Length: 136
Image (tube, rainbow, N blue to C red; front, side):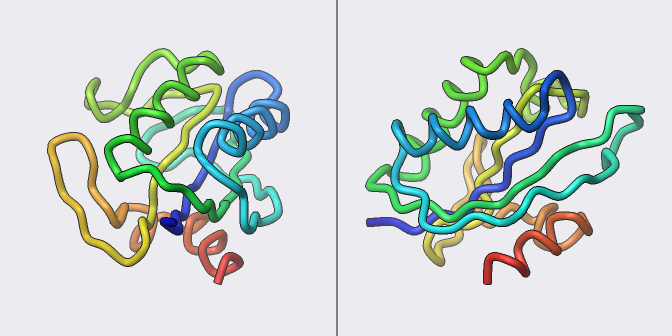
């Protein structure tokens, strides 16, 4: 089994419900939730919005590969109303749910659609550092 660290965020609609729904879908479609942090609120980073984020970190046990995990995450995001993907659009914007793969075991993985570890979260974003510290 693979041990994966995910960060979830929402800044549109019922943010708490969006995150709860995403966690339930992750648990049923991806793998068992081993640990989760408390919810924290943060300002948007890398773009301006008046909508604050609710964020949470989770550790999941899964038998999925990195690419299959990414595909499952994108399906969950779409099912919860996520329309645009910042990776493909080239810009950040408000979203009902955002799920990022931060770590996948201890591997380093780079492709056109996925980078592990997620450098922005582990080195640049303060809210991410707080969440990741809580998961340790």
